[in-house]
Length: 106
Ligand SMILES: [Zn+2]
Image (cartoon, rainbow, N blue to C red; front, side, top):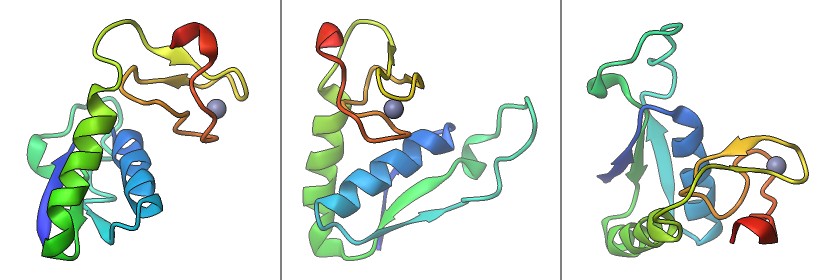
């Protein structure tokens, strides 16, 4: 098992985990429930973490996550046209409903 990624925003972590699983990567989340302090920035140690279960999949998982995080390297956050949720500019699909980025934001 290897730790792949961590971020203070658990929604981002969960979204990435879902995308990895769609790609056949066996992974799980650590610290899932520990960063719930209301309005308080959690220390890095309590950020949710994505772990890859199988070491042989780690390299592939790393490539997938790097690709996803560099798809949009500039610009602003975007609003989902389906559910109106705001999304990080790093995402190419809505974290909430999995809709693709609206054309206007591409
Ligand atoms: Zn959406």
